[in-house]
Image (cartoon, rainbow, N blue to C red; front, side):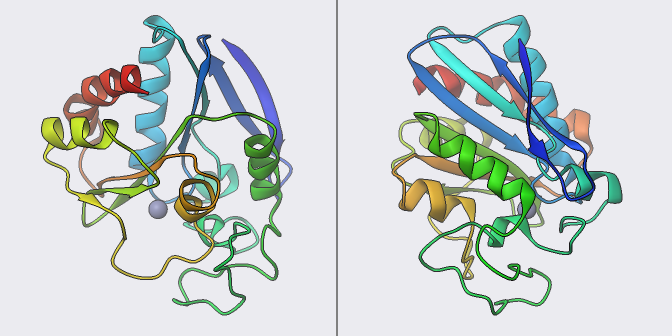
Length: 215
Ligand SMILES: [Zn+2]
């Protein structure tokens, strides 16, 4: 396992990434983009440990379990500057005006330290697949780009619906940036918000782990 500091947060804390496995294919797995969605961060840690003890054949995986490290520690959706990191990416649909005041997109696209570290990483590696684990009252697999057969495999085993849209505009989000604009299939995995973490792990870990072999 290779531990790297991808960059630093607004509070000066390291954004840690853990690289596991080796092979021609490379997947990126994010958690904690929204600091108050602790289910996603916890799940990525569990998946990291599973893949560390049982590496996936032919697949290199970069894990960033607590991407918005300040938000995770402060228990806020936004980062320490009050910006929603999943509305701040430099997509063609990014706008300075917030579609929803709860989701401030920042002063300019890619203005935040965390996203600058992430976009630098994405643009300097050839990635084959991205998962970003969040949590939401409505559980679903939000797919951007061609996420088959992975999305169908997860749907079949968890019953989570596959949706191409969250049902409301999400300018500046990761799915648009990587899935639609960079051609890297991206699943924004919305776990059930508030469900006990051990239950979520028991319901999703094996399935997500097995799906990685399909990348
Ligand atoms: Zn979220």
